[in-house]
Amino acid sequence: MRIALAVDIGGTKLAAGLVADAGEVLASASAPTVAGSADALFDMLLGVIGEVRGEGEPAVCGVGCGGPMAAGGETVSPLNISVWRDFPLRSRLASATGLATFVDNDAKALALGEGWKGAAAGERDFLAMVVSTGVGGGIVLDGRLLDGAGGNAGHIGHVCVEPDGRRCVCGAQGCLEAEASGTAIAAWTGRPAAEAGPDVVARTGRLVGRAVASVANLLDLRLAVVAGSVALGYGEPFFAAAQAELDAQARLSFAAGARIVPAGLGAGGPLVGAAAVGWRGLGRL
Image (tube, helix red, strand yellow):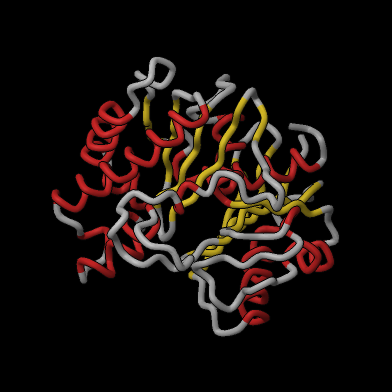
């Protein structure tokens, strides 16, 4: 059995784990993302990694991190982690762990994991999404994860769903992330996203379904798998509203009937996805 050191970096939580090459999470640890400074946050990340390193000897380090980032994760600038701008994540982690280290967008990591062991296993064309603190996505077409020039392909969080909507942290207006992320929901309702009422849940689902329909129409795919604390926390009412909007907006013959379903890996998905980034980097996935 070969083991990957898996690292997931999000706007609210840092996590690390050891993941077997069959996709099983063997050990994990996490801590809140407290971003006092770039180096302080990195030191906190190393502390979380240190909690699991003693549980096995990994062959590779795979990382999922919020974007945008430079190709290969050489530098990262997560929109929800303001102290990391052009932060040299890959080289710093490689030096600290002594492992071959591969970094990709966290939602692209999810796409790899869901296609490997999750709800998209066996599918050659699908979208994977995270609806959480922020909103991200990864796209697999013809069995291949799309990267783009800088590795940032799939940023569905910055598809415009409300032309006259809220200003997004990216600088644009009406992005899905500005309307349907946990951060946005808390900002415009004045309450934590987890406390949202039925109307907010339904609206969030509709906007996600609207964005998925645009991708389905554009890229000729018929499956979206969705993870993240907002989507999974809202559950069936969210997915019903999203599916209804997808049905209403994806009407071309090749997109009609597209499905939006919960991601299959559950709470372990981010770490399984990060491990998949590592195995992909080694040419084993």
